[in-house]
Image (cartoon, rainbow, N blue to C red; front, side):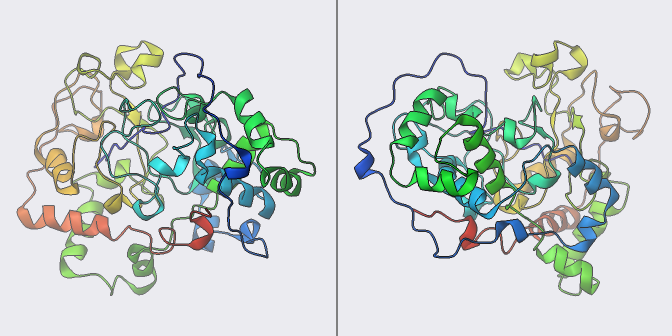
Length: 374
């Protein structure tokens, strides 16, 4: 099942130049509380099963992520949580990417400094080592090229990069943090982007009940969770054809049959960038890790619960001239075939929901080194 999530606070596409920032007395800026010894972000790694997985290594080779240093990621942590990055001094990256919610925000659409809801649902954040194309329409390659876009967006943080560098240079705790991370205290947009990207690479999600079960033959699963796992992987439902591997994700973007005509309903996805009819409604396929705590779901947040998502893929996929073949009756062949009707039983539907909840991480959502330092 293709759980299309959300391009939320990171929507990009600046409409107008940001306004002048609201005044902030540097002496009154919040001070981060950091440990005496820098946390060893550079030593964080993935399990050997991940490091040896060919598909993940291929994905990681194209990520374009910067080298992680302890001081660089520490600076990135402070920047991620600092409302000073917004024009109005009341919105941070973490406003819409909350740790306890898998770095999503629990809303269909989010609001930034303008008060105008974002067009798409806020994406959850994790496993950036293996991420390449960013945003729901995949328009940006690599997280380092993504992180500055919400800062400048008028409906998100609405801060020009020139104004931001001047602002941060005047806040007492930033020059020492930049010096530790980069060798001198100069604040630049490239350094801001690098530090934030380094911090985001610490968002590892591989500590779930599902991961525990891989090592125990799933002795920790309930009967309903086991049924859901069987339904997910049985081949007939094709769930794991779109959400595959350890990431439960795909590098491809799919048309999943939410609409007969996506553009007519207000969001053509990748089709708005390419102008191609066969891209109408094509969106990034999100990872299912932490999916149990990162709703609402789909690119527009239309489904409040995982049960609604399961019901949609079971019974309500809409015809579309370029519907992905994996969501069609045949399961292969040309695009645009008649939608697949799974007609799952009540037990199978509940089992799928229960199984998806086993993908929730037990470490990332509460780790202090990923938490708010202010």
